[in-house]
Image 1: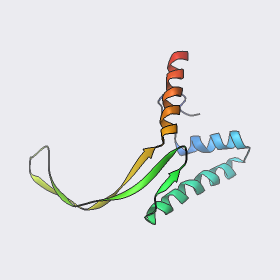
Image 2: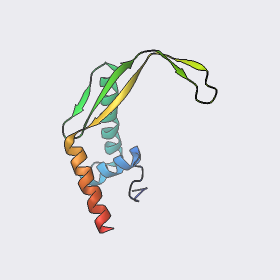
Image 3: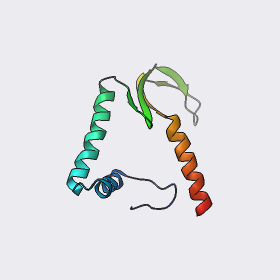
Image 4: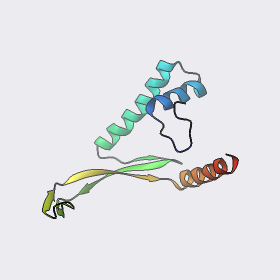
Length: 109
């Protein structure tokens, strides 16, 4: 992968490469598969539906009301508009496996 150091950033191209190597798709097919999955997640969220991937995580859009905040530099009040925010909640299995794998990598490296 492009970024093989621990705690590096994996980009979409890295995911495509991993799908290509593990499944045996062509690179084009792997790119299409990754793109389809990501687009389905985006479209589902845009339709105000939650996405839950068992054993991985859940994605949820929630509404935040407009509010008055304070500019930390000037101290002046600033109006923040109402908006929707995306939340990501990892599954218990994901948390356990990433902590275990992280500990294993620390102990071997």
